[in-house]
Image (cartoon, rainbow, N blue to C red; front, side):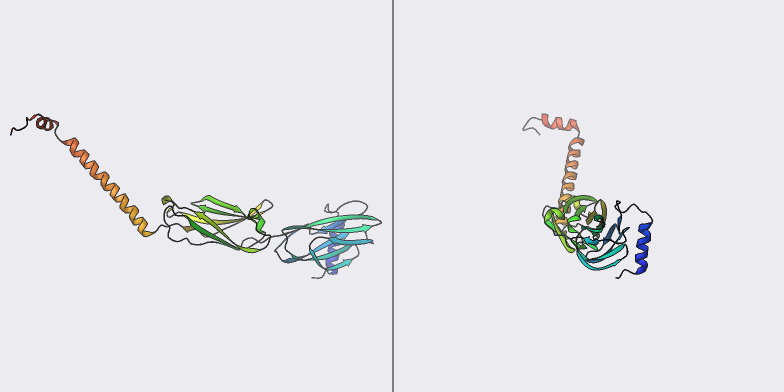
Length: 262
């Protein structure tokens, strides 16, 4: 990308319009854009302008890799290459009559998660601990990412990758969490959520929900136990009812009959 004469004229017109973006003093310096968001690995041009038409020195100060540059009366444009830092700065400066003025541009680099997938769990056993795997693809920066596992719409586990040693690189991430399912969790939806915090602005991607199911033989046992418990309760209810419905006088007569008499 080259800075054309029309772009240079546009820069001068914007700066001549008297915006408050620059640093004011014996002369002013402005930078465009003041803040830019780009995907990781991208390049960007930083355009600097000044009211000093014959600066003694000028340049761009940044820890990022610089590429081409273009200059003209009252302006200079600098190319910043292959940006892979989440939040960085580029400071342009001009020196005029021994005075130096600066203006700073903020460069932010991020990539929201492209996909979030929660692996379908196997048939489960009640009380047995299982591992659940959540896959997040091409997210950056990892130190701004929080992963959340929810069950039945309620968050049960979360992890912040900055606190777990992940580097600031765009990557595919697999998060493994452990859960000991209960009988009441059967059929409940479970989801994985990737939450990217961009200085207070949240970008959230969620997986397709999966449901928890238990093994068939276990459920057969549970149904059998419930059936036996119901049958036992029913038999107890019948026995109690028979006892209560017997005539009280007959019980007394049998109790008072002397032993050995017909």
